[in-house]
Image (cartoon, rainbow, N blue to C red; front, side, top):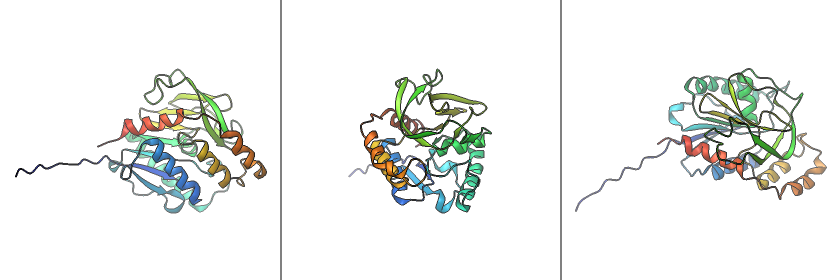
Length: 253
């Protein structure tokens, strides 16, 4: 009898970093990243930043880093000890990510903290966006970038943020904008991306977050039901293609 040895080569996982203290919101966000990114069990590892921070991460073990959003704001004057710690940890991680041009995709807070690290102003003075869908338009650079080329030049995406990047970070490439928020997507170097909109969020996921964060100051709590109803028919699909392309482009075996 001839024995055939089959070697199974596992892809390096993506590291998903989250900062949502509420379990329902955190699990929903994780499931969205996994589902829309085309990830399977073993394709990702998860760290809850608000619980453990992020220390001693060996980037050689991962295909890329994904940082989600949450109720934290980088421009807040008063921050919890947990936020201070994970922002310190992220700054250290960004040093290595930039030095290696390591694949990174930040969403919402993941844009704000990275843009601030690059020296851009992230404040509440302008460009906040109410919870809901906005029309995002690709720039000329966006029409040619690997993650966004051949996508519709304008598409709907879900947003909801109290602070925003006030100007394009130095040396960043501007990929997308909206009428209410100029910096919707950027690339830094070749492989480092961040979006103000949520590339993982559909109407069902938005409904979960509206319920979880209805007392977090994004909108009057009594408006939660009407807000959910008004967003259920939004055809939001293009942002997920950006997430899927990121995973497909940077998956390392």
